[in-house]
Length: 115
Image 1 (tube, one colour):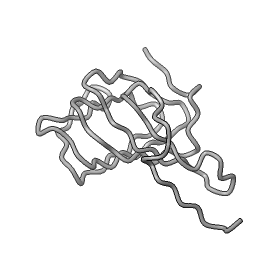
Image 2: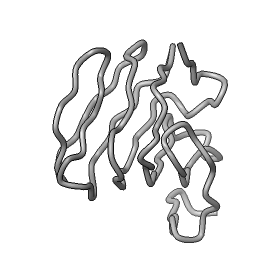
Image 3: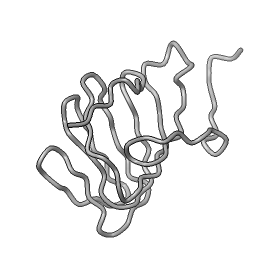
Image 4: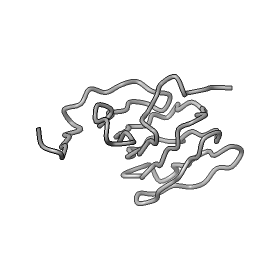
């Protein structure tokens, strides 16, 4: 098997998540310390946080009124922006959007917490 990996996100199954639907890659690559997700975010994303995961959202596309809630602050979003979300930060995306999410360490669904 070659050392490189190639993923076609359109061939990955969508998994429901607090934000919408995520397609997750590289969980099965032991030497890669992260997972990469393409996530389609719904209007009703839930506020949540992680104790150990750091997420980095890269905004591919979004509605003109899209925002990110980070703890008690809301910031406007537009395509091309990137948001680093450290552990413990309560967050949710507001408005429909499509993002790439880099998750370090690898995504663990047991580290999704809700108030």
